[in-house]
Image (cartoon, rainbow, N blue to C red; front, side, top):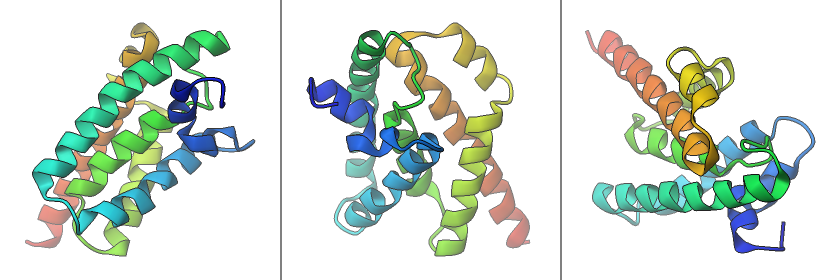
Length: 153
């Protein structure tokens, strides 16, 4: 992990090295990051940081995947971190909403409904690693928006 800065990023600072459910641990890593910056940064700054994290993830996951010999190694969790940060930015305030968002995101990331599954199988390298989680984030945000709309009727 410490052989190159890309590995440190891709492996979520070590979160991806846990023996069970590294993607879940990587997703959880986004929560304190979000809580730490949400009150400090405007929405625009948060989105810029997420975009920079996405670009860094393309580089880091691409390089780490090549080093490990597996394009989308399970230990690379930076994709979950960045995608779930995006989800949290648009999740309604409150712990219940954040837990619901977490469960939805993990469901979509694990089950990979279409077109997530298609892109997971066809896109390779760092962009492929990052992109399918971005789609899972999109699905999560759609369900959250629907749930919020139904609850406010």
